[in-house]
Image 1 (cartoon, rainbow, N blue to C red):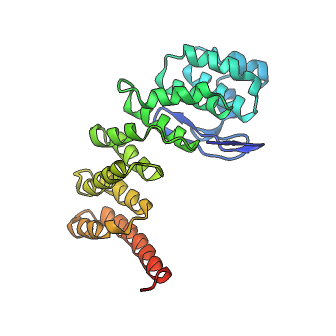
Image 2 (cartoon, one colour):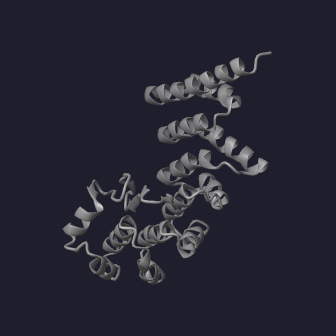
Image 3 (cartoon, rainbow, N blue to C red):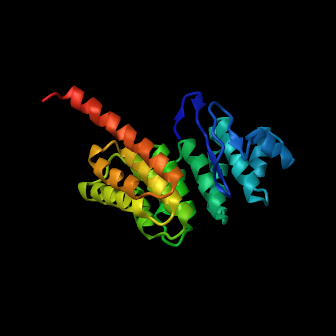
Length: 251
């Protein structure tokens, strides 16, 4: 997420993953605005009340308070948010608060996100959230960690998230780009249908028409109708791109 003058996008994670998207100075938390979520916790919305809420015993409240301070563009709150971050022991809240701090322009927030995504002892879910938050800021330093999780994690949700993040990296080395393509292509044959669908879509997002033959094979072998239809859409998108490229560069 990037802070751009008076208008920015803020997204906060909740326990089940990424929740809530919105523009402007407010967004969602589990389907309600940050303000409403704070009110439900009986937290006031004035600047002093939000800063006090950073010390609340509920990790969710601490995350919401930090996010709302970002929404209100209270850069003066950076020291208090940083203090909260240093004391935070809840893994998910740590990601959320680090993101809020980064959105306010603090290097400490960005560095904490990097530390989380590269921490092999942290939960894979939290590492991937931190990696995604960094990419939203144009920081691709967590690419090795995402590639690692795409290969090693056995949890379907985490592996799917890692695979879906891979196309977003624009500055991979030639070796890592080849590994990304290999991982996504191999995952078309995964035993889990959700992984197969995620891989097909990710391949279409790479905009690399060289994967078309592999997609055709996967479609031919696919027995799940929902997955097959999804892969066919991905194939069609790449074939359209291939056709466009051939028109643009006539023989």
